[in-house]
Amino acid sequence: MSQDQVKSALLKTIEGIQNSPNASKVIFRADTELVENVRCKATVRNFPPLITDEPPELAGGDTGMNPVELILVALGTCQEVMYSAYAAVMGIPLDSVKCNLKGHLDLKGLFALDPNVPAGYSKISYETLIQSSASAEQIRTLVQAVESHCPVLDTLQRPIEVVGKVSANGQSLSLGAAAE
Figure 1 (cartoon, one colour):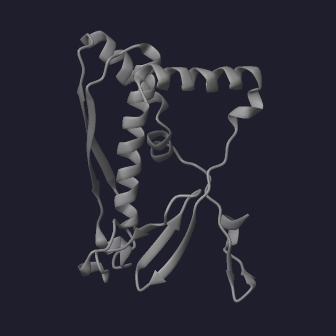
Figure 2 (tube, helix red, strand yellow):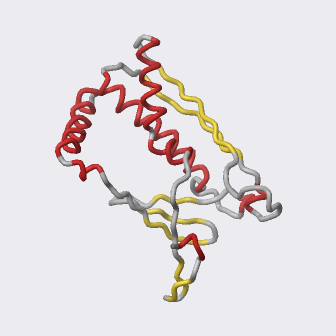
């Protein structure tokens, strides 16, 4: 798809939302399942299942990315998608966009060895590398648009409501206030 086709598709979607504001509310879905040991499969829409696994030191067979690596992948690819989309709409040429990401995780939290250490990342850092013939000012405008509208970056930077429920053997289990 060319940059003009990307722009046309996005502008058509924007026009649809402007004409019917409720069309902006969408729900994305994923289904996951533990397959064996720490290997899982994820199914989204009609795509082939995505396999996640852990490295051997975390009891895995190393047959796929692990869930915390997928968070980094989600952030990097979302940034790249947003650069492509905004550049197309703004008429800014892009030769390439690449993201290098690092997630800092202390395994003491994951293994409940220290109650003061979180189980998840304590810090995520990324570097975006852009190649473009656009002016520095155009690129700054593009960066500002992407940094302020990237859905995954936004999700990671602000508190969001996450609710869950658990059933075991067909019976609902209470999770306390988090499930309400």
